[in-house]
Length: 244
Image (cartoon, rainbow, N blue to C red; front, side, top):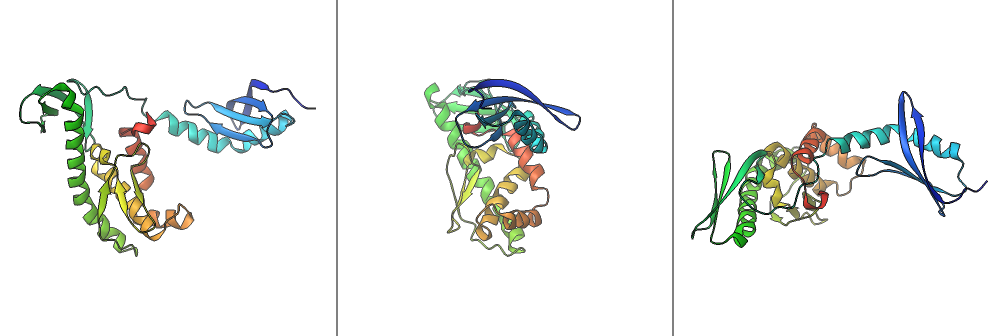
């Protein structure tokens, strides 16, 4: 019997865990199950799909659903828009530093006793000067860290000159083209060095295995066995603009 379009709340029993999900019926051909950013489970189903079949499919995806909800639960809350004012907190190499803005003719940033001392000629210059400082620091630290990363990947058949460029990206820490051009996000300067190494090694592995196929993850696992731990720490400590 064909159901009416609409939204209802249902519960599926996965082992000893009750999975509450939102059932959305609409005119469509296939059933899809997703975990929304707030952790809500949503099943979008065709009008004619039987309730018992939808519940069965939710149970089949139970392990994946719970894993997605756990990962979402440890992500940082959305950050408020930066105003580049004294008192704001910024990370540098994984450590929190309080921003202190002062007026002065010689613009720049000094890192001192847990503070980022930002000197600007006028308040509307604060964002530009601070982001310029982070970019310069990212260039320096990536140049430093890519050397041991190249040595490590060379043992696994990955060879690269070590050249790279910096570009602000809303949702990516790095990228690698088919030709081996590496690009990294200057916001990496906010992350701990072990997380920076993860991003560098992740992209260097793409030089040999371009896609995210099984062979790629096998290579990454050999190069950096704890890559999942480092990725989780990176995502927990530093948020990209497109994730806020």
